Length: 473
Image 1 (tube, rainbow, N blue to C red):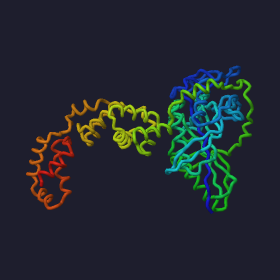
Image 2: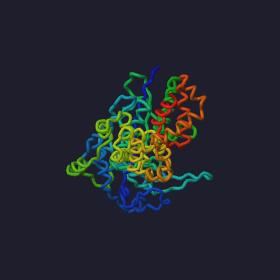
Image 3: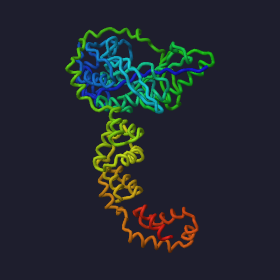
């Protein structure tokens, strides 16, 4: 029997604000436990929440970028459930009236485009964090994260493979970073996702029983977890078994999913409007202003890169996968005006050291990389020397021209100077010279290698090839 995989994602993006969603506590990551707390986020009796306006603006920006409908009036609800790291005993979220609904996101997998529906975007607060003791049967509660501002983005069950799920997740990750509403730091939990997955016989309209994979914070883990769960469910169904609806965790050490708890349905949370927060009315003037100030988004920037810089689809997609990388490329290209060569150097060298979303950590300035590529194109240095200089730049930044001068790496392009060395090398290797004259063209590489050793890699390789052919002939 053939099965069709059905996947829906629930993504949590932490908003890039200075304070929490309902109080003035700092959102800075890494503070000592329970130091960014107050009576509001600790749910002390008599304390009242006050909504952070920036969270609303961030939600509207994402709604506009995903072609979602902004609900001009929306409200907060209490989602009732108990966890030790949830001081109130309920979470302030949105239910029947979220801030935005009915959006879309375009993805591309294996050269084919597909539109994925977005069911809803809603605002909510985060819970705290449990830290489990490795040696004793106890856990510690850190409430610094309680009250952090989140947007939850819920997709339609339109994804049909783990590859599509990862493509959707990467596209959404790029979008929130382009909008500058989320730092996208998956290691710190600023961008994480839950995935619902089920299988059904191909052609069947009704969905199968789904399982939910919780709190995955890397693209790789999402891919591996969905692939494993896809295989696990298929094996059970082929053996005549049934799928249990449950919440699972992905264990990256064993590469397996593990049961966490039975899955609750929405009505189990006993939602009702939060009496401490008035309904939110989003004014048309706010929407118009935010729409006018939206940045150039990934798809539009990719299309412009292909047209303006004559880049192919792959390079344009890669360079626009993060706003930081796209900005870096454009700034560097202002120096060298060699977009294709620059894109190739970034793809083969720079992105080996830094992922696209880590470009803010790169010590190399765009101007310096543009200068390095310009030096290659002018013949000042060879491509091989450029890689050596680039390694020095990665180690501590710096001007490539100064590095080249300090290390004596300026490319030798003086024909008379090189010809003298070429004649010396040919005279020292008569056997190899005769082999070349007998038709063994590959011996030319031996001679060029000897010259590179003698000049510490600074000889102009094109000129060296030409001079050796001339001398050997």
